[in-house]
Length: 256
Image (tube, rainbow, N blue to C red; front, side):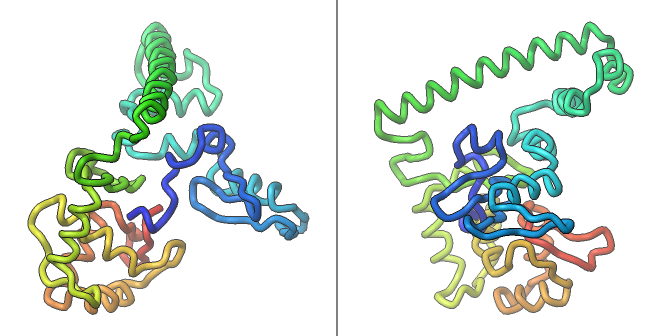
């Protein structure tokens, strides 16, 4: 899964806030990995932009801002409850406590209480980040590195976030060797959830990010991988958050 895109949490905090990452050669959107080459001029709506201006415009037009993007993510990834997500969205929209209370059906005092809890959560998050970074410095060992290897990265759109995603590189390698042949064809679709996630993460690499696929194209690609029952794989890619499809099921895309 990590190969599909750079996970947003792998960027520095200030880069996530600004929405873009700068390298020697380009600017990269941290939310969708769209890149803009330095030294090149980009035209948009009959106006010309340098690379930094172009990535900023891209963020405004496509993602609005980092806060808007993050509020659309699964609550299991952001650590926010549904009510907290709704309240923060209202704040982002510039609504007052009175308006928020009316929209969410809660008293203004409850809105203030949620504000207080979110402020405490922010302070705890700062201390937690300091703790984890200090731990990494002191032990020269980040938390995802276990005795059995590094844990698998979690896709940003995953709908299930639990120990099924606690996958080491050794587990991933062994599972792929067991269930897939040297040509990338699937011998058997595993029954265990963790192994399904590993296999689906490998299968999704056969699809391009930002490309729209018709169902026939999806079927053709999956049939080469698992001729016995490719519709099951197609459904699993949707259910496990690796792909999304339009309401009429005519268009499929890799989820970002």
